[in-house]
Image (tube, rainbow, N blue to C red; front, side):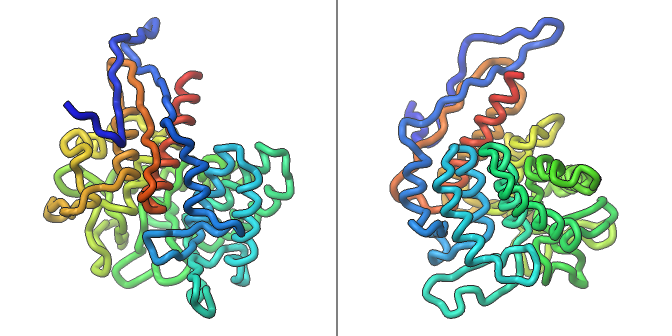
Length: 355
Protein backbone atom coordinates (compact mmCIF):
# COMPACT_ATOMS: atom_id res chain seq x y z
CA UNK A 1 0.00 0.00 0.00
CA UNK A 2 1.40 3.38 -1.00
CA UNK A 3 1.91 5.83 1.86
CA UNK A 4 0.47 9.32 1.51
CA UNK A 5 3.57 11.46 0.92
CA UNK A 6 2.08 14.39 2.80
CA UNK A 7 0.89 12.88 6.07
CA UNK A 8 2.21 9.71 7.67
CA UNK A 9 0.57 8.29 10.76
CA UNK A 10 2.57 5.46 12.30
CA UNK A 11 0.80 3.35 14.88
CA UNK A 12 3.18 2.03 17.49
CA UNK A 13 2.59 -1.28 19.22
CA UNK A 14 3.36 0.13 22.68
CA UNK A 15 0.49 1.12 24.92
CA UNK A 16 1.27 3.60 27.66
CA UNK A 17 -0.63 2.69 30.82
CA UNK A 18 -1.32 5.46 33.32
CA UNK A 19 -1.61 4.23 36.96
CA UNK A 20 -5.16 4.56 38.18
CA UNK A 21 -6.52 5.18 34.68
CA UNK A 22 -6.97 3.64 31.27
CA UNK A 23 -4.73 3.68 28.22
CA UNK A 24 -3.52 7.07 27.11
CA UNK A 25 -1.92 8.07 23.82
CA UNK A 26 1.66 9.20 24.08
CA UNK A 27 2.86 11.92 21.76
CA UNK A 28 5.89 11.40 19.58
CA UNK A 29 6.60 14.26 17.20
CA UNK A 30 8.72 13.97 14.10
CA UNK A 31 9.80 16.93 12.02
CA UNK A 32 9.89 16.50 8.27
CA UNK A 33 13.14 15.90 6.46
CA UNK A 34 13.26 19.46 5.10
CA UNK A 35 13.64 22.74 6.96
CA UNK A 36 10.12 23.94 6.30
CA UNK A 37 10.60 27.31 7.95
CA UNK A 38 13.69 28.13 5.87
CA UNK A 39 11.87 27.19 2.67
CA UNK A 40 8.82 29.20 3.71
CA UNK A 41 10.94 32.30 4.40
CA UNK A 42 12.62 32.00 1.03
CA UNK A 43 9.39 31.66 -0.91
CA UNK A 44 6.90 33.88 0.89
CA UNK A 45 8.71 36.65 2.83
CA UNK A 46 10.34 39.50 0.94
CA UNK A 47 13.63 41.01 2.20
CA UNK A 48 11.56 43.97 3.46
CA UNK A 49 9.28 41.72 5.52
CA UNK A 50 6.16 41.58 3.38
CA UNK A 51 4.37 38.20 3.44
CA UNK A 52 3.16 37.33 -0.07
CA UNK A 53 -0.12 35.47 -0.55
CA UNK A 54 0.79 33.68 -3.76
CA UNK A 55 -2.69 32.22 -4.17
CA UNK A 56 -4.36 35.63 -4.01
CA UNK A 57 -2.67 37.86 -6.60
CA UNK A 58 0.38 38.44 -4.42
CA UNK A 59 -1.41 40.62 -1.87
CA UNK A 60 -0.39 40.95 1.75
CA UNK A 61 -2.84 41.08 4.65
CA UNK A 62 -2.84 41.53 8.38
CA UNK A 63 -3.75 37.87 8.88
CA UNK A 64 -0.70 36.70 6.93
CA UNK A 65 1.63 39.15 8.64
CA UNK A 66 0.30 38.03 12.03
CA UNK A 67 0.57 34.33 11.26
CA UNK A 68 4.16 34.68 10.13
CA UNK A 69 5.07 36.82 13.15
CA UNK A 70 3.69 34.02 15.33
CA UNK A 71 5.68 31.41 13.41
CA UNK A 72 8.87 33.47 13.73
CA UNK A 73 8.45 33.37 17.50
CA UNK A 74 7.84 29.62 17.40
CA UNK A 75 10.99 29.05 15.33
CA UNK A 76 12.99 31.50 17.49
CA UNK A 77 13.82 33.61 14.46
CA UNK A 78 14.07 37.15 15.76
CA UNK A 79 15.62 38.68 12.60
CA UNK A 80 12.66 37.51 10.52
CA UNK A 81 10.25 38.68 13.21
CA UNK A 82 11.76 42.17 13.21
CA UNK A 83 11.60 42.43 9.41
CA UNK A 84 7.98 41.32 9.23
CA UNK A 85 6.96 43.55 12.13
CA UNK A 86 8.73 46.59 10.66
CA UNK A 87 6.92 46.16 7.34
CA UNK A 88 3.59 45.56 9.09
CA UNK A 89 3.91 48.59 11.34
CA UNK A 90 4.98 50.83 8.45
CA UNK A 91 2.42 49.77 5.84
CA UNK A 92 -0.72 48.47 7.58
CA UNK A 93 -1.12 50.86 10.52
CA UNK A 94 -2.75 53.67 8.58
CA UNK A 95 -6.06 53.91 10.47
CA UNK A 96 -6.75 56.39 13.23
CA UNK A 97 -6.82 53.63 15.85
CA UNK A 98 -4.61 50.69 16.88
CA UNK A 99 -6.09 48.25 14.34
CA UNK A 100 -4.38 47.30 11.08
CA UNK A 101 -5.82 47.78 7.61
CA UNK A 102 -6.61 44.29 6.39
CA UNK A 103 -5.11 44.26 2.86
CA UNK A 104 -2.17 45.72 0.94
CA UNK A 105 -2.07 45.24 -2.85
CA UNK A 106 1.17 45.51 -4.84
CA UNK A 107 1.22 47.53 -8.04
CA UNK A 108 -1.86 49.53 -7.09
CA UNK A 109 -2.05 53.14 -5.96
CA UNK A 110 -2.93 53.45 -3.21
CA UNK A 111 -2.02 49.89 -2.16
CA UNK A 112 -4.58 50.12 0.66
CA UNK A 113 -7.99 50.94 -0.82
CA UNK A 114 -10.08 49.54 2.06
CA UNK A 115 -9.39 50.73 5.59
CA UNK A 116 -11.46 48.03 7.25
CA UNK A 117 -9.60 45.74 9.64
CA UNK A 118 -9.59 41.95 9.95
CA UNK A 119 -10.02 40.91 13.56
CA UNK A 120 -8.10 37.67 13.22
CA UNK A 121 -5.15 39.61 11.87
CA UNK A 122 -5.25 42.00 14.82
CA UNK A 123 -5.44 39.12 17.30
CA UNK A 124 -2.55 37.31 15.64
CA UNK A 125 -0.32 40.40 15.57
CA UNK A 126 -0.98 41.23 19.22
CA UNK A 127 -0.44 37.59 20.23
CA UNK A 128 2.86 37.38 18.39
CA UNK A 129 4.05 40.67 19.90
CA UNK A 130 3.23 39.48 23.42
CA UNK A 131 4.99 36.13 23.00
CA UNK A 132 7.98 37.76 21.31
CA UNK A 133 8.27 40.19 24.23
CA UNK A 134 8.28 37.29 26.67
CA UNK A 135 10.63 35.05 24.69
CA UNK A 136 13.22 37.68 23.87
CA UNK A 137 12.83 39.93 26.95
CA UNK A 138 11.71 42.83 24.75
CA UNK A 139 9.19 44.90 26.75
CA UNK A 140 8.72 47.42 23.93
CA UNK A 141 6.97 44.69 21.91
CA UNK A 142 4.52 44.16 24.76
CA UNK A 143 3.85 47.90 24.69
CA UNK A 144 2.97 47.64 21.00
CA UNK A 145 0.53 44.81 21.74
CA UNK A 146 -1.33 46.63 24.52
CA UNK A 147 -3.28 49.20 22.45
CA UNK A 148 -4.17 46.58 19.83
CA UNK A 149 -5.75 44.39 22.49
CA UNK A 150 -7.61 47.34 23.98
CA UNK A 151 -8.96 48.31 20.54
CA UNK A 152 -10.18 44.75 19.90
CA UNK A 153 -11.96 44.70 23.25
CA UNK A 154 -13.60 48.11 22.90
CA UNK A 155 -14.46 48.14 19.17
CA UNK A 156 -14.95 44.58 17.97
CA UNK A 157 -16.89 42.75 20.70
CA UNK A 158 -20.69 42.57 20.79
CA UNK A 159 -22.91 40.99 23.43
CA UNK A 160 -25.34 38.36 22.14
CA UNK A 161 -27.42 35.42 23.31
CA UNK A 162 -24.26 33.31 23.03
CA UNK A 163 -22.25 35.77 25.10
CA UNK A 164 -19.67 38.17 23.67
CA UNK A 165 -18.78 37.59 20.02
CA UNK A 166 -16.04 38.95 17.77
CA UNK A 167 -17.00 41.00 14.75
CA UNK A 168 -14.75 39.96 11.83
CA UNK A 169 -14.11 43.64 11.14
CA UNK A 170 -15.22 47.04 12.33
CA UNK A 171 -17.44 47.67 9.28
CA UNK A 172 -19.96 45.61 7.35
CA UNK A 173 -20.75 42.74 9.70
CA UNK A 174 -23.75 44.13 11.63
CA UNK A 175 -26.64 43.66 9.22
CA UNK A 176 -30.37 43.13 9.05
CA UNK A 177 -29.87 39.38 8.69
CA UNK A 178 -27.84 39.36 11.90
CA UNK A 179 -24.24 39.56 13.01
CA UNK A 180 -22.02 37.92 10.41
CA UNK A 181 -19.42 35.82 12.23
CA UNK A 182 -16.45 33.73 11.24
CA UNK A 183 -15.88 30.80 13.65
CA UNK A 184 -12.19 30.61 12.69
CA UNK A 185 -11.62 34.10 14.12
CA UNK A 186 -11.86 32.58 17.60
CA UNK A 187 -8.13 31.99 17.95
CA UNK A 188 -8.36 30.21 21.30
CA UNK A 189 -4.66 30.13 22.27
CA UNK A 190 -4.37 33.84 21.44
CA UNK A 191 -7.43 34.72 23.54
CA UNK A 192 -5.98 32.70 26.42
CA UNK A 193 -2.56 34.34 26.26
CA UNK A 194 -3.74 37.89 25.57
CA UNK A 195 -5.62 37.82 28.86
CA UNK A 196 -2.19 38.31 30.45
CA UNK A 197 -2.13 41.81 28.99
CA UNK A 198 -5.45 42.68 30.64
CA UNK A 199 -5.76 40.53 33.76
CA UNK A 200 -8.55 42.75 35.09
CA UNK A 201 -10.71 42.21 31.98
CA UNK A 202 -12.85 39.03 32.10
CA UNK A 203 -13.83 39.44 28.45
CA UNK A 204 -11.00 37.21 27.19
CA UNK A 205 -12.17 34.18 29.13
CA UNK A 206 -15.77 34.95 28.20
CA UNK A 207 -14.83 35.03 24.52
CA UNK A 208 -13.33 31.55 24.82
CA UNK A 209 -16.57 30.33 26.39
CA UNK A 210 -18.72 31.99 23.73
CA UNK A 211 -16.57 30.55 20.95
CA UNK A 212 -17.01 27.05 22.31
CA UNK A 213 -20.74 27.69 22.67
CA UNK A 214 -20.91 28.84 19.05
CA UNK A 215 -19.08 25.73 17.85
CA UNK A 216 -21.38 23.46 19.83
CA UNK A 217 -24.31 24.83 17.86
CA UNK A 218 -22.69 25.52 14.51
CA UNK A 219 -22.59 21.91 13.33
CA UNK A 220 -24.04 21.28 9.92
CA UNK A 221 -24.26 18.60 7.28
CA UNK A 222 -23.41 14.92 7.36
CA UNK A 223 -20.29 15.37 9.46
CA UNK A 224 -21.45 18.15 11.78
CA UNK A 225 -18.89 20.71 10.60
CA UNK A 226 -18.77 24.48 11.16
CA UNK A 227 -19.21 26.84 8.21
CA UNK A 228 -16.71 29.39 7.01
CA UNK A 229 -19.26 32.15 7.74
CA UNK A 230 -22.43 32.17 9.81
CA UNK A 231 -25.16 34.66 10.72
CA UNK A 232 -26.42 35.08 14.29
CA UNK A 233 -29.79 36.82 14.60
CA UNK A 234 -31.29 36.87 18.07
CA UNK A 235 -30.74 33.23 19.09
CA UNK A 236 -30.80 31.72 15.61
CA UNK A 237 -27.84 30.62 13.51
CA UNK A 238 -28.06 30.53 9.73
CA UNK A 239 -26.09 30.87 6.54
CA UNK A 240 -25.61 34.42 5.21
CA UNK A 241 -27.05 34.76 1.71
CA UNK A 242 -23.85 36.23 0.28
CA UNK A 243 -21.51 33.54 1.64
CA UNK A 244 -21.40 29.96 0.39
CA UNK A 245 -22.51 27.47 3.11
CA UNK A 246 -19.20 25.64 3.13
CA UNK A 247 -16.69 24.06 5.43
CA UNK A 248 -13.57 25.14 3.59
CA UNK A 249 -10.56 27.40 3.60
CA UNK A 250 -11.75 29.51 6.54
CA UNK A 251 -13.24 26.94 8.92
CA UNK A 252 -10.33 24.53 8.49
CA UNK A 253 -8.59 26.66 11.11
CA UNK A 254 -11.21 25.82 13.75
CA UNK A 255 -9.76 22.39 14.71
CA UNK A 256 -6.25 23.85 14.57
CA UNK A 257 -7.11 26.53 17.13
CA UNK A 258 -9.04 24.11 19.34
CA UNK A 259 -6.01 21.83 19.49
CA UNK A 260 -3.58 24.70 19.98
CA UNK A 261 -5.75 26.03 22.78
CA UNK A 262 -5.92 22.66 24.54
CA UNK A 263 -9.69 22.49 24.04
CA UNK A 264 -10.06 18.99 22.61
CA UNK A 265 -12.20 17.32 25.28
CA UNK A 266 -15.57 15.75 24.61
CA UNK A 267 -16.90 15.75 21.07
CA UNK A 268 -15.24 18.98 19.93
CA UNK A 269 -13.10 17.26 17.30
CA UNK A 270 -15.53 14.48 16.39
CA UNK A 271 -16.85 16.03 13.18
CA UNK A 272 -13.36 16.77 11.88
CA UNK A 273 -12.00 13.30 12.73
CA UNK A 274 -15.00 11.54 11.20
CA UNK A 275 -14.59 13.61 8.06
CA UNK A 276 -10.87 12.76 7.86
CA UNK A 277 -11.34 9.08 8.61
CA UNK A 278 -13.95 8.73 5.86
CA UNK A 279 -12.27 10.84 3.19
CA UNK A 280 -8.62 11.13 4.26
CA UNK A 281 -6.09 12.27 1.68
CA UNK A 282 -8.70 11.87 -1.06
CA UNK A 283 -10.89 14.57 0.50
CA UNK A 284 -11.81 17.84 -1.23
CA UNK A 285 -10.88 21.38 -0.33
CA UNK A 286 -14.47 22.15 0.70
CA UNK A 287 -17.83 20.56 1.31
CA UNK A 288 -21.27 22.16 0.95
CA UNK A 289 -22.96 21.92 4.34
CA UNK A 290 -26.51 22.09 2.97
CA UNK A 291 -26.19 19.31 0.39
CA UNK A 292 -23.05 17.42 1.58
CA UNK A 293 -21.69 17.91 -1.94
CA UNK A 294 -17.92 17.52 -2.10
CA UNK A 295 -15.94 19.86 -4.31
CA UNK A 296 -14.05 18.16 -7.13
CA UNK A 297 -10.79 19.93 -6.26
CA UNK A 298 -8.60 17.91 -3.85
CA UNK A 299 -7.59 19.45 -0.55
CA UNK A 300 -4.08 20.92 -0.57
CA UNK A 301 -1.43 19.55 1.81
CA UNK A 302 -2.08 22.25 4.43
CA UNK A 303 -5.74 21.34 4.85
CA UNK A 304 -4.84 17.65 5.03
CA UNK A 305 -2.22 18.45 7.68
CA UNK A 306 -4.82 20.11 9.92
CA UNK A 307 -7.31 17.26 9.58
CA UNK A 308 -4.62 14.64 10.20
CA UNK A 309 -3.57 16.59 13.28
CA UNK A 310 -7.15 16.56 14.57
CA UNK A 311 -7.30 12.80 14.05
CA UNK A 312 -3.94 12.37 15.78
CA UNK A 313 -4.86 14.17 18.99
CA UNK A 314 -8.25 12.48 19.26
CA UNK A 315 -8.46 9.79 21.98
CA UNK A 316 -6.69 6.59 21.01
CA UNK A 317 -5.59 3.47 22.93
CA UNK A 318 -2.15 3.45 21.31
CA UNK A 319 0.84 5.72 21.21
CA UNK A 320 1.36 7.18 17.77
CA UNK A 321 3.77 9.22 15.73
CA UNK A 322 2.63 11.99 13.44
CA UNK A 323 5.18 12.94 10.81
CA UNK A 324 4.67 16.45 9.56
CA UNK A 325 4.84 16.90 5.78
CA UNK A 326 7.66 18.59 3.95
CA UNK A 327 6.68 21.72 2.06
CA UNK A 328 6.72 21.26 -1.68
CA UNK A 329 8.21 23.71 -4.14
CA UNK A 330 4.85 24.40 -5.80
CA UNK A 331 2.73 24.74 -2.65
CA UNK A 332 1.00 28.11 -2.37
CA UNK A 333 1.19 30.45 0.63
CA UNK A 334 -1.98 29.41 2.43
CA UNK A 335 -1.38 25.68 2.21
CA UNK A 336 2.21 26.20 3.34
CA UNK A 337 1.27 28.37 6.30
CA UNK A 338 -1.37 25.85 7.41
CA UNK A 339 1.28 23.12 7.35
CA UNK A 340 3.68 25.18 9.47
CA UNK A 341 0.93 26.16 11.90
CA UNK A 342 -0.01 22.49 12.24
CA UNK A 343 3.62 21.66 12.96
CA UNK A 344 3.81 24.39 15.61
CA UNK A 345 0.49 23.45 17.21
CA UNK A 346 1.51 19.80 17.28
CA UNK A 347 4.80 20.61 18.97
CA UNK A 348 3.05 22.74 21.61
CA UNK A 349 0.40 20.06 22.13
CA UNK A 350 3.06 17.38 22.57
CA UNK A 351 4.92 19.54 25.09
CA UNK A 352 1.79 20.11 27.13
CA UNK A 353 0.90 16.41 26.93
CA UNK A 354 4.18 15.55 28.63
CA UNK A 355 3.34 17.62 31.70
